[in-house]
Length: 411
Image (cartoon, rainbow, N blue to C red):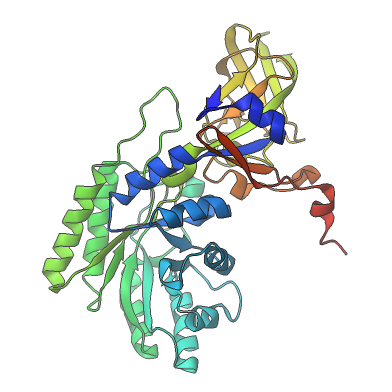
């Protein structure tokens, strides 16, 4: 199996396993695809924040959506200008964060009334920095591929409730702020029909802000993880956005900037996680049916999405003498029973795959978004290496941690 023109065996041999690998061709294709949709495309950098990934975004003309002050600073280190970054959050994590944004001209997108008020107090105190802000609106509904990724509706903490917009305007007026932007993101996993309807809702909310300059329709663009199904065509989103902005420009009588801020759709497909089969095991269920387990060195400390969300990822084995295709459960080395790559609703789900042998490679696809970014040192596992593939070239983008790295901050 190859990633671009490089054999996965060669990558594993040079960099060890487990290892994250990113195809720059796939990433560049995704950047070009998404940039066609809207005049301003931001990257929700929480999906994958490696500096080399950020560098590709910058060179591709993509701006940044950051959700923490450290993400803001990381983007600045990667070469983005302050005008390229929008800080979106529900709270300022620390006292002084609002002042930092004012001092450094970082545009803030406030997801709660409290955050809007804190920004207003900081602005009133300083009387310096921009008085322009954006607000994130909760439209009263959400749409996530899991309840844990649903970021709208009454049981979501995100966004200013749509019935509280009068209060938001009152806070802005109290502190001399101008709400120049509105934003909405209700979760990952929507389809075109749903995006069409929800963008119409945001347009209605946006009309309530007389100084509107920017409307950000968020992310949530669909991505198909199942390898047997065609990738979702998102080109139809462009005319939907154009129509929404046309309505607003006719309403206000001036140009409105249209933005989107996907994360997953940018990077999911460019990422692979390569591991190694370490052992085979089997049990028997209550009916006597045999259950075959393939145990590898990829655990939920490396890729947590299957355990956290029941997420599907394509899986391939690479070996010289793979056995016949049969039902197998692919699991990891971590001590929890939930450490399985093939599961749904907290239960193991066998996958039809050729039976490998110890020493064969496991390749997990669709791992570019929320893979390395959500990995951990659980079980004192080091954070693993990240590698870039560009044609037939392979380069290290992050070295593998050592035990010294893991314990360095302990006193």
